[in-house]
Length: 325
Ligand code: ATP
Image (cartoon, rainbow, N blue to C red):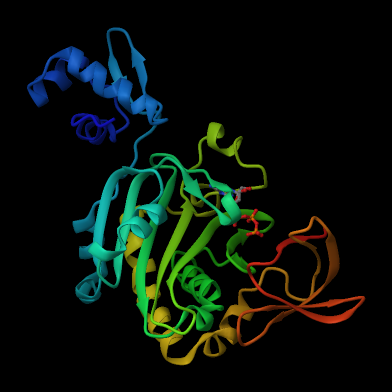
């Protein structure tokens, strides 16, 4: 169901202040019932809106919405190398791009102010909320085949680490193969989906979710420790600037990856490695757990772990990694 007024009204409420139903109705030249319907629709999308008799409507707090022009302006000269499409809400930015590959060109970024059914790996959910998360996907067409893209999520992790460092979040570390951690808490995740032949060419949809400011109700839905930028950064980070800087880093890293493969980025990835030389548990698809010490990653992006069976190599589709302590 669509409601034409929901997001225009939400955008009025992003100042975090009360707006009376009469004033909103006047502004959009609609009835108060239309305003009420639009805000009911927002609630069905999971957006919390406070409604107080005599004062009107307000969001729990002020927030900045994503805006394609603001992202492109913050990218400077690099803005010519990407297309940015911002949606009010989407079920999943990855699903949207995967379903619309033929109508979207190379280096298109699709972002959603609200992602309602975000996905993790193997059917797991990625929880997000309006103003709570930056969620977007980048479409990248590779000449090479899917078989050469095994280190891609690690290369994307390097771009994320570089971006977070540039915003002063130097404690951000990478957990193989696709997460960003602060200490033991998850700040961001990467989901890469591929289409094409093993031998090439192939198309990657690179999905990224970064927690900006998670409200308690979203935190409670996440079944592992999670954190957000509001908790770890001393400055207030504007999501448009964050997306712009991240896209700039991604452009550089993805071109480098295309030319030189992950081998070229391996050293840098290791500098950000969360579990380097630490004891870990690996959860196998068949439910088994294998313990060992992480020795690092190989040039193809696979994980190297010293186990009782000797040095073993794991591919990213196979296992989930967990710290022991
Ligand atoms: P793996 O090590 O296999 O990547 P994972 O648990 O990190 O395991 P992902 O598929 O990468 O799995 O991500 C999905 C998981 O992330 C969810 O099952 C949930 O535990 C967690 N999660 C969901 N939403 C968020 C969020 N906004 N912030 C942090 N973690 C989240």
